[in-house]
Length: 222
Image (tube, rainbow, N blue to C red; front, side, top):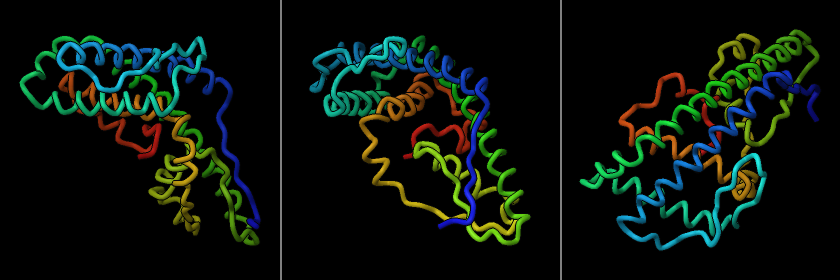
């Protein structure tokens, strides 16, 4: 058993500010995907299509369709879009999807900015706790409790922080792959939203800003 435990957290205001920003990105992503599906269906019929609308607004808090059904639809949709964007038909998608892609990009990048700020607060709180514990010579091992979806973002940010080395702390790693795989049905929407970000960047001819090339900008570990 560990000698000590570190809990991290953020203030209520920071969390409350993040929620509506996430909901807006969620909604804009849904509009973007539906538009992609319509444009793709005009060119070639989709083999997979949901029996009912997979997307429901965040405000309604509805479960849309089964995970298996939605996964097949999404996989075919995104694979075809990515493939067709490399050919002459790219102009068609750029012309008809640019507006929705830009709306989604604006909402999603705003969400990432809030998320990164929240991750920085967590990181700072953890370091503060570790500094206190490292000053206590009797402390042998420390466990940091975090949610599974936050694990890799926190681990990757901490392992690159030289202050841990200065405190004489060695960072261990836990394999939570099986846990994350078991959570796939519940994290699918965020995985798709993260994937759609790359598609939207491609459609608008933009590169991902350097400020989003950080662990805190990853919402679902790949």
